[in-house]
Length: 281
Image (tube, rainbow, N blue to C red; front, side, top):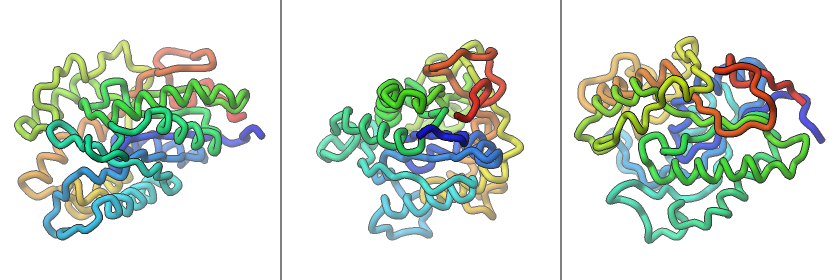
């Protein structure tokens, strides 16, 4: 059965990845689009950065709660949790965990995403860009698996998704991010000319500032990661909360998307909107 309502599926690796693209998610939901977020891992390899939350017995469960709250604040439906484990990054990669994304059969991940596509029948799918934002292995795996799932979903015929977009970062925003977090191991050593996208590559440049209130509320929902609350997100305390808030500001204000694939003609370049040229079917 074909859909008569617009549907958008966002597939990201961890809880909090959705915040950077929350403007498009919030706007789409406000326009009546069904917005589904599939989060592939629970971010269980992360660290708690708010001492007031310690001790935490189950970080994955805490981050799931935070993710549900973030989705509520963005005005989208509760997330689909695909249940794989967070791989970690750098020296902390969890290669001894068979359910960590780096060790899972990639086709299992593709199958899980195809199943979500078959259920919600999105016209547009959004995921990480090819470099994984900041070279995170889970982001790169989710990028490849979602891209494969987009093509595999061609078996749905008329209900196959039409457009695949990659959430990315402009060159200026990545430089600001890397410089602000210098010495913290997040973007150290990463070449901004590789990880920041030049304007000709950008399929959609979305001004997210009208959705700042919702995005910041969703940002603050991930308190364990950012150490921010709704009361402090606009005026964060000195130290890590203030640095994190500053580092992400350009990406919170402006969302950049690349075109990964399409099953229909593109009406213009760059696109005017996520669903530009796509009708509900």
